[in-house]
Image 1 (cartoon, rainbow, N blue to C red):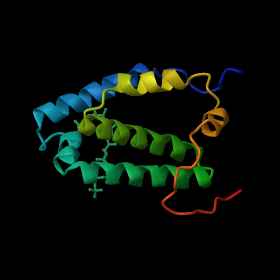
Image 2 (image 1 turned 120 degrees about the horizontal axis):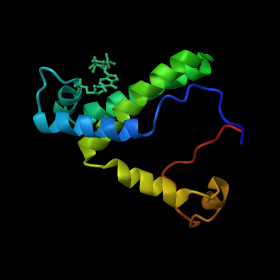
Image 3 (image 1 turned 90 degrees about the vertical axis):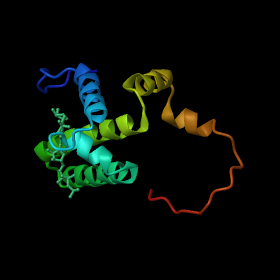
Length: 128
Ligand SMILES: N=c1c2ncn([C@@H]3O[C@H](COP(=O)(O)OP(=O)(O)OP(=O)(O)O)[C@@H](O)[C@H]3O)c2ncn1[C@@H]1O[C@H](COP(=O)(O)O)[C@@H](O)[C@H]1O
């Protein structure tokens, strides 16, 4: 695979640091200074709603071909995903482990190996 020609100053460890910061905000519960604490104090429904909104905003930027906007909205999306993990008591390692478990497993092969005969709640028509 060709190396990506994008800035490489970032580090994936930022995700763990961010999770720890948000967890500290949850523990402090100080809604006067922390957006994370304020959001979590509004409840799980609000936390989940915000994640959905940020996802839609990211999708819109991507569809419009706005590269910079997609990067900015991606950062918002990841931050709000981590707030959702903290709110749900999920540690990053749990997600990393699941990603590692899936490494090397083709998504197409995994889907084909799923048990057949599961009754679907509704028949949907997929786009090609
Ligand atoms: N990465 C982020 C980050 N990204 C986005 N946001 C905030 O998310 C909010 C999104 O604004 P919106 O208007 O969409 O949402 P809202 O203010 O909840 O308003 P409503 O939807 O309820 O109307 C803004 O206040 C942004 O500043 C973030 N707030 C915090 N962080 C990180 O989290 C750390 C801890 O932040 P605090 O919890 O605020 O201390 C910070 O040091 C940052 O590293």
